[in-house]
Amino acid sequence: MSILSYKGFTAKIEVDLNARILKGRVLDSRDAVEFQGQTVEEIKQVFKDSIDDYLRDCAAVGKNPAKSFLGKLNLRTTFERYQLIEVAAKKSGKSINAWMDEVLTQEAKQIINVN
Image (cartoon, rainbow, N blue to C red; front, side, top):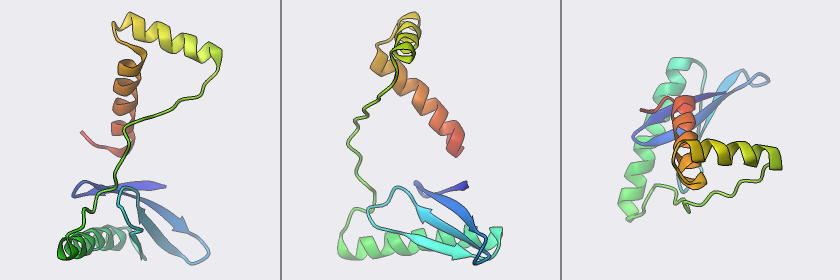
């Protein structure tokens, strides 16, 4: 799986070995935005074209294209991991929530290559 970003939208790209194509899906839009291509260069261009078309369509009907997120994250973990998180947060001088927000955001940015 690979990730592409364009105009604030993120898509995941997967290989369909049976169909011998690359398939993409935008992860953070209100609607299902899917696309496909035969090559890496084609999938990149089709992704950009899909986003441009989607934004144009949303603008035409006065719709907000971005997915709304609640801003809440529930985490279930083991007692031992919770202890580690609590100690790390305290050593950083932060609440668990602030520490997790910082650490998870940094890791997410690295994974999807966003600065």
